[in-house]
Image 1 (cartoon, chains in turn orange, yellow):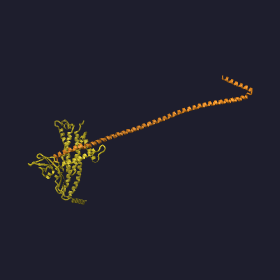
Image 2 (image 1 turned 180 degrees about the horizontal axis):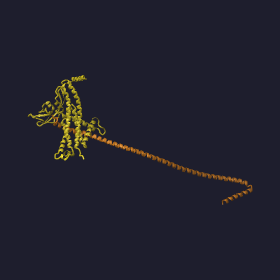
Image 3 (image 1 turned 60 degrees about the horizontal axis):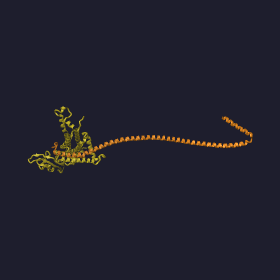
Image 4 (image 1 turned 180 degrees about the vertical axis):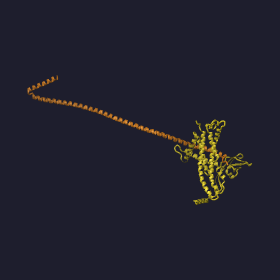
Length: 169
Length: 343
């Protein structure tokens, strides 16, 4: 039997059929599948790489976020310090202004007091002068009755004036 | 216990009509009818009438030119237009008017050719329907499920484990061929195990088929071999006295060029053929023991069925394994022909 001798008819058909099958499969069959599988494998690789990059970016973002937070905190402290400084300054300024104002008021009061005192002194002086003159009038009126006593009195006065002038010399 | 077995055997014996297997089994015809090629596809026999598919016979005779007729006319040893099947060789021969027997050019569509056609169409449908999934869907967005997923798994397995590893850098150029070979052999092996039409044709167990496949690998290896490959054959890296004056090593290498595809051819052919013969032999036990009495026949039939199931499962493994081995060795040979010289 022709078990180990290849039959020509079958060889012919096999060559023809296999050629056609191979042509169709190699053109429309396997390349479509393998290309897609390859493309998907590439895509998966790429996605993994992208995911890693995204992760790294996320980590750097977190770092930056932390940095921003730190910066904000530092800024906050600075602003707070500035605020305190400004407050102190304002208080100092206000105090200075208040002192100045109070000094001015005191000065003004003092001047007024002085003016009022002068006025009062003047009034007192006028009153005292009037009173003195009145008293003097009364005294004089009483003492003019006695000539001796008057003379004596005038002498005394003159002496007094003399002594006082000599003392002043 | 013994009584029980006797009872079961007796019941089994009663179930089997005497004389079912009484007719003599022509072992030669039985075996070669299944593993060999024929002009008709005998499917079954109903009431001693054969149910067959008669296939076209295409002949070219030097004396009478082209002939094309149905094999119905030459069934049962009849003669038609001077052609008849040679009972010894099982091939059509022409008997000339002077009595000489002459073998014409015979490209008939035989049982194996029809099986080959059916399996090839099946293969095309399977692969193209899987490829269609990739055309219809965006493989970037989803992975195939169901049949396309199974095909992808097979394709990936062959491409990644066999082709990529064995061929080397430019494997993409060869992967369509190697994948085609793998699936072609695999589907033909599987269909050969199916015991009824449209399976059952012993295709990959036919040397003409494996020869064509081996020839394709031979062409793939030698036509696309690089300079290094040819240098390795004609002037290998061995001491000079092995190359001149007697080109001992080049001769061995050149013989090796042919033995590699030859081994591919014989390995696949012999494995599948042996599997078929084993299976047929196991099944034949049922009919061969019919003459030995009902009890023995029944007992041996049970054993034969169990052993047949075992063989069938084994053949499933072999069907895959031989396709895998053929593809792997082809890949290795191609890989060797594409090797770059090592520094």
